[in-house]
Image 1 (tube, rainbow, N blue to C red):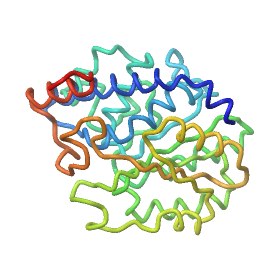
Image 2: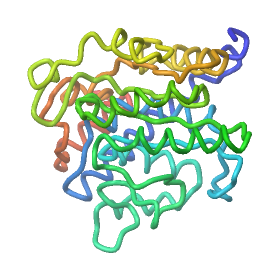
Image 3: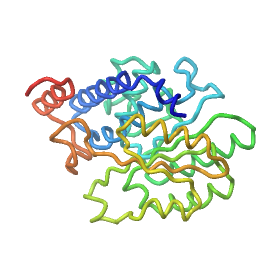
Image 4: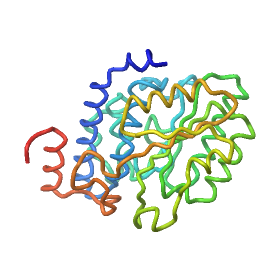
Length: 280
């Protein structure tokens, strides 16, 4: 396992994550709306999956043998769109159409319009149920592909999440991995103030999941957790990834106001300069 992780080009992935954050800033500035906070907190998770881990084919998005990824926290789709464009699912210049009338890049993912989207999400709490259906289908078919589901903090306050969490172990879905973008924020404020989630590891373990807690911005920890999930059999996997809302831009980090607010021109330029490593 350690040898496999050492073979990963971490500096390349870190560079991609920075560049995709710039794409997100430009997308949101052009749209005048969107969600930078959660798009940035999930970025290393998405980059690790799309640019190293997932079995997928941008030239054949419906390939039967592909791994499935569901971004259940659908409002984080700017980060997902940036990854899909970089991977080759659609032209990079199309990112500028985010949230525009007639665009394939809606404010929440739409699988009927955009290649690479497995399910339309955004109504929070539903993604894990759909992921369970996919993972169960793979089991029934004897297929080797895996299903990944990215959840958000505010989202796991939904009752449907815990109904799904109870169901997955019943079917021994060890081909299902949940990754929680645990940035401690939601639209109304810190989760501790709105609806506390702790103790999260104990809750998932009590539902009979295999649980790991990691730094969601550390590629080595992300890959180690994914490889461990591959090796552990008989249980679904929950990776609780500690992240920072707005990660990468100093004036956005830990600030709830950037959950769903687009930067203006001045803020966008400042953010891009930071991400490019240029002095203010």
